[in-house]
Length: 120
Image (cartoon, rainbow, N blue to C red; front, side, top):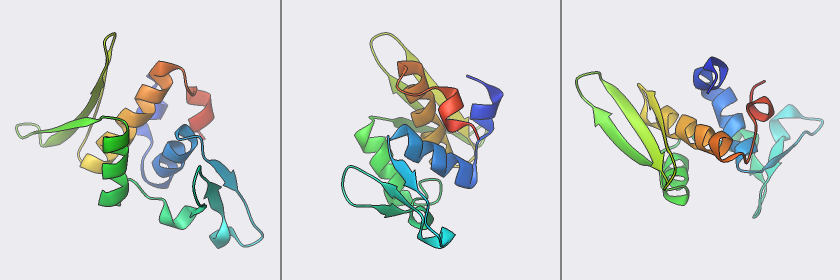
């Protein structure tokens, strides 16, 4: 994984997660009305913040079987996804960021998206 992918944070990380979920961004004349078209109802960009929302982060964890662990000695969170062929891990000081990065790294590792799709 590239350092650029690992360095994503905040709004960039939120946007990358939306893209990795396959959501399409729709811009409007008023930037505050921009939204992602999901498989269900549209989600306003301002309301999609898995790096800050416990509910949205938990949804990513459950939907994609992401496990987490707090490493007390280092004071960081580790999120991981394991399959028969590989394990993907991401670490961050905040749980939400570790989960989002792990999700992105897994989507790239599976070949569902490329790093170029999510690095801005």
